[in-house]
Image 1 (cartoon, rainbow over the protein chains, first blue to last red):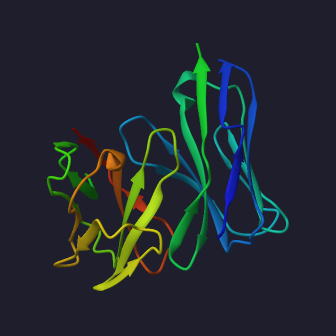
Image 2: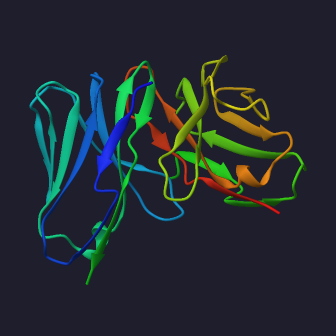
Length: 109
Length: 112
């Protein structure tokens, strides 16, 4: 069974600080996705990374895919209250997603 | 415009009383998924359809069934809900050509 571990599980920081969330697996995935989910809503796709070593930026969010395509990180610069939510990484394979354990992020104004 | 619609958004049922959740999509996607998400946990895949081909996850209880009468609609039937089945149920779709899954807003199920 493929397993993606995210760390930290919970993170609460002040507005304006930087943070990094990690997603690690023992398995190789063809691609990896990051989602953000707000309370009472479904996950919304933020980014898909495909190539080992790939770095993608989405405004203040920077996503990196590990060289071996087993791990990924999400870095947020100058966090804002609107960044609050559950962040999920998901490995893609065989038309199925394997979700990570999730990181619940709270940004304190 | 909503692309993946789930009804109802909130559903309350009694222990053991069958319940059906519905999902519809306007994307004409071939693949539809049902996930169960419990509080503060990641979504867990229950099953998925590729067109009319049903694919059940090995650890999905028999209590959970699904129907897909056409491309646009998919239903989740819980035959005898238990207290442990209280969760958010998410529907998602994807086109075979891409790996992006589009999620609905979910149905939050409460079992009394």
